[in-house]
Amino acid sequence: MEKLAIVILAAGLGKRMKSDLPKVVAKTREKTLILHVLETAGKLLPEKLVVVTGFKRSLVEDEIKKGASQAGVVYENVSIAEQTAQRGTGDAAKAAVPFLQGFSGTVLILYGDVPLLRVDTLQGVLMRHHKDKATVTLLSAHHSNPKSYGRIVRNEKSGQVERIVEAKDCSPQELLIHECNTGICAVDSAFFAPSLESLKSENAQGEYYLTDIVEKAHKEGQIVSSVVADDPLETEGVNTLSDLAQVNQVLLNRSRTALLNSGVMMEDPDSVFIDPLSTVAPGASIGPNVQIRGKCCIESGVVIEGSAYLNNTIVKEGARLKFSVRADEAIIGKNAQIGPFAHLRPGTELSEDVHVGNFVETKKAFLAPGVKASHLTYLGDCKVGARTNIGAGTITCNYDGYKKYETIIGEGVFVGSDTCFVAPVNVGDGATIGAGSVITKNVAKDSLALTRGPLRTKPEWSRMKRELNKKTK
Ligand code: UD1
Ligand code: CA
Image (cartoon, rainbow, N blue to C red; front, side, top):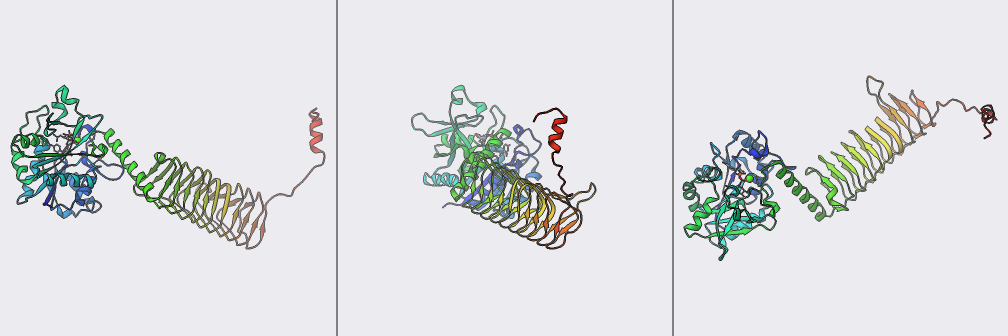
């Protein structure tokens, strides 16, 4: 293989983004545009890697410094060139020339605002370039809506690429061409610098277009070769916020496909949102309308029935999240069963085999293995021992209007329905709490605590009341 140098153009303003920031530091759902391109470039192991900066150079440079290792590139191996005024892509490429002194081989140009390109596609361009012994090889793409992309003009008979015309310079006929320039091209280093010197800015935008080197090569009788991208979506350039949204959609689809291919089941992948920082293990199953946000970790065998919102949450092996669960900064233990309609707030830690049922809310709550809180309960600022059963309607009253206090419940405790624990309070192992109790003092191990008033019944009371109100029934 010939030697490879890569030049990334990233000096532009990005006016169409309507932002004060340079466009290449705009962020997709994964990372900034420049880091996407840097990562792809790094994978081709170039001999030289030059990034052309300009508009708010320091912001772009800082981003590269900060993110180089994440992008798999050694920052010290990246040369930062500067284009002092933004006079077009041809002028930007020229700024890279001094950094390529003494280099002989292929110069691959990448645009900092084309983030989705796959390494395989670029390798295809380089292979064609070498195979055809071309001077210039460009990557084109067919777009049903070619927007502001440059159009590829081919010779009608031979099909040879003759030139690239920017949309703003196109004749009405040329605008009908659907084969577009992606900006990506491989150029022979011997042709690179001299061709840039000869560029003129006599065009609709008064800019030096890098794309004009194609016409120059063609007119000189040099070989101009081309590769058509299999998937036009991966060549999408980001010029507007709407382009950015489209790129995010593609990235999201890529993560869904990657999960499906790895063995994660998804009934309706289009309705599943997965943050790039989250992981889902093969063998997990995800139903419709699920959001997995932040840094979640979903282990194997987990079933999420559907309509769940999980943020920074760990769901361990075999746990089942029934319909409609919201969990934020929570840990859900192995084989636990949650929901339907459960709300796990930050600091919730549920151990193995815990059941948290419908209309149960937890916050800063540690539930030891086998604890069951199946219905209508609030457990906040509490620790609950193994196998304890929390009856329906139980509340830990953790707040007195000023401060928060803790409730500690031991192992194997039976908590009757409609119990209030007025914290701070402790309940010993094996205790029983009678239904309807308000527990304001510590309860000793193995005892029964009951605050209910004695039951009174008045025979015939209801009948007499009915008669008094002249009712027959
Ligand atoms: C460019 C191509 C167009 C192609 C499209 C693909 C040219 C003349 N046009 O148009 O044929 O279809 O990309 O996405 O090349 N930049 C600089 N300095 C400058 C101007 C731009 O570094 O003076 C950088 C930008 O930061 C950006 C890239 O070059 O990363 C492309 O610039 P942009 O202005 O977005 O070009 P397009 O109009 O999209
Ligand atoms: Ca662009």
